[in-house]
Length: 190
Image: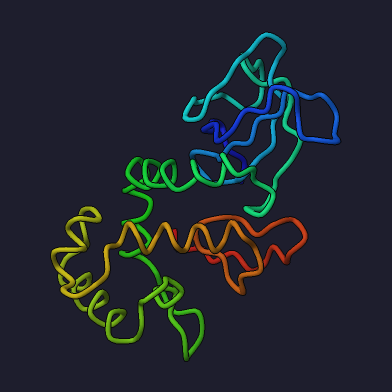
């Protein structure tokens, strides 16, 4: 689950304290929400919110990708920016998240994928399933309108993304588990 593009959360021109003098960039992938540390090319001055290409081939702004990181490894500035940037990414990836609500299935006989979202219990889950069986949701606003009393879907997704980026989840629905965790924890809803 590699990302082709990332959004800069923080740029540390002189690297981390006590570390190398790398031109360190903390970023989040646009497609798969991987938190990454990158090294910027010499002479590049990136700022929060900048989009950078990190795919295969020639990269204009990024020299190389150091690796994936967890939410705890973010700088203070990156942590603050993450909230705003996640909101923008949720808006951009509306189709992906609506697909989750339209296609999510049970994990076991006792739990459904929808229940992995914060504040979604059995009542909300059944209401979502009932409404999507009549007609699939067209976007997150449509979901919000059709399922009364459901907390704002964008906020639910943002909370879940942050939980997954922190690591330690039993199941992952929107991001890949950190490398140190079992890769079989990823739930497919596609």
